[in-house]
Structure formats: structure tokens, C-alpha cells
Image (tube, rainbow, N blue to C red):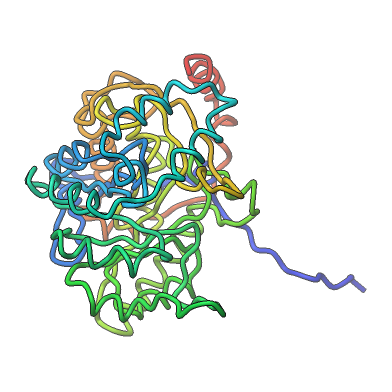
Length: 383
């Protein structure tokens, strides 16, 4: 008689473990439509720049919007703690590795200045851009009215793990249905990785869900907390919740795969797994216009007691225009992301992102076992 298991585990898949199957009919990539919609906003590029201080500042948000995408400004970061954030960003970039975490803890210990919240939002709006801002759940009630008064367009509530139900004995938790009634803008909430949590969040009336816990290049949540689900499985489970909610309510709530994508192939796989858009950090941090000066760090690294991030050197490889639209000057898939997505859709014979959700995927051996070891080793040496 077999010994019963205490827990039964299912296999979960990351980007390196799956591949997209091309279809029998192909189409011209230029005929594909990759529009992404959230609330009343439509973006021609389904890519969102992460709300990380090494990626997004006012100028980057304006440029990203002009190029058809969206960038999210962190309202709890350097941009709202310092009148001149460039000096602080330069200090972080120049710090020795051994001193980075204490330095970041010191930098982020400075209080957030509420006047800078409105100032940064207004600067983005004056640049003609769609303005999206991000806060943690704990500060949402405090900062949401300020963001609304400054005419922000999209409000993101973001933490390592966000749920529709939070139990606390010290205060009345954040209730998303009430938040939705109090501010006149689409609300995106994250992060989550499960069908049930995603479905509950959608039922509160929010406009989008961020998917992913711990996969980012600068995040160490999985090492520190042991929490997370590989991104392909997390995206598929949350896509199933989105489709179930659509059948239940008639309302389509997009999901945004957030983190863990190292190259354009991963990006394409995220859409095949069910994503409506992707949120990128380290890839966009390589842009000349990114605020991190070739460095990128996790949002949880400055935690005064339990840092869950690390500063990484990503370098500067090209302009944001080049990363999004090419021409690519590198072979690793970190540039011309939009064209790669369109080509992948073309070889799969699909015209829209929603059709891309239906393409077949297979479990695949790691790419290093399929004759790519020389490519990967050369890339590693180059980095």
C-alpha cells in the first residue's frame, strides 16, 4: 500500500519550460493588431514600464507614452522623496555592491513629500502623456485623493502579494470597491498568481490585474519568502479567471504579466499563456533614457527590516525606441520587442492578442539542451 502524501503538488511552468507551436496558416506580421485596452484608454503597444525607480521617471513616462506604451511612476520612490532625484539616482549607481542595500534603506527612509506627488503627475500630464501612478496598499487611502486631484489617468495598487480580502486587527483594510467609487480613474491591482485571488479581485470592479510574484530579475522574494508561482502557470491560471469573470459578468478585465521576462521570446510566450499586456523592468532599464543609469533594483530592497531585492547592473544597450521598435543591434532578444511579438503572431496565424491566447503551447526542454549552449555561453561571457 502506497504511503499517502501530506500534500499533492502540481507542476508549474516558467518561460524556459514551454514553447509556442506555429500554426498551419501564417499571416503578414504588419497585419497584426496588438492594441491593449484598460478602462477607456487604448495603447498601441501592450508593454508597461514597471513602477521602479531604476526605470521610470517623468521624462521616461512621457517618452513611453509617445511611443504607444505606458510607464508607471512609483509615488513612494525617489521621485517623490527628493526635489532633485537625479543626484540620488547617480549616488545609487555609483555605490559599491557591498554598500548598496544600506544606502537604499537610507535613501528611502526620507519622508514622501505630498507636494511632489502632484508636481510629478502634472509634469507628466504637461508632457502630453497618459499618467499612471503606483502606490502600495498601505498608502493608497492617503495618496489616491492627491493623485486624483492632480489628474492622474490610471491608478495602480501594487505590492508583493495583493488580495481582495486582508485580515488585520489594527485598522480597516483597503476595500477596492470603495476605492473604485472614490477616484474617477481605472484601477489596476496586483500582484497575484492564482485563479481564485484573481477572480476575487476582478469582482471588486477594478480595471486590470498584475500577475507575478517574485520572478523579476531584481526581486529576491522567492529566495527570502519562498513565495511565488512560475510565470507561465500563473498567467494561465489568472487568464482562466479573467475568462470566467467575463462569462459571469460580461466585463473583460485585462491581465498584465509582470516580471521574469528576459527577452522577446519570453514576452511572446506570456501573450500565448493569456496575457493582455506585459510589465517590464530590467529590459527597459537598459534604455539610455531610463532613470537607473544602467542599474535596476527591486521595489522591496529598501525595506528597513527584510529587504527582498537586489541592485543589478543591466547596462545601457540602446534607446527606448530601439528596444521597442529596433533595429536590434544585439542578438539576445532584448531589442525590437514589438516586431518580435508581431512576427510570433504572424507565424501563429493570429491577428489579435486575444487570438494569440488560443495558440498551442508545449512543454519543452530547456533551450540549452537544444543546441544553444554556445549561444548562451557566448551571451554570458558578453554580459
